[in-house]
Length: 138
Image 1 (spheres, helix red, strand yellow):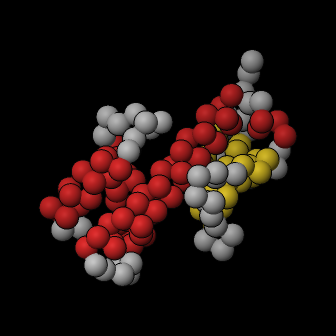
Image 2: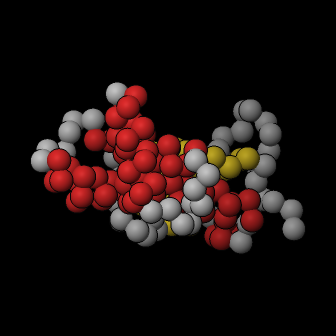
């Protein structure tokens, strides 16, 4: 089955609504305006609920691949956030630092760059990434 869209991006985050939009283009024409075909709610810890704005995205393989990739990033980021807030900061006796979002991003990206199975990571992977971050003095 042929894909509906020629390009799909899953990296546009809206700070106000706290969603990632899944933007799609039907042609390779640089003048074409993209369309939001779905959005992913980033506020729920383990759900990353998808809202489909174009119902065709539910069945399009390319769209589903991009949505799944974005959902995994959201869920992993939320897992890192919870790990830091509930386990690490209390254990070292500090409040959430001002650069917390940067720390979450660093750890999430570090774990993604390793050979860890994205469906089977655990807090030890976060701990290793946290140690690397401290060694680099990020």
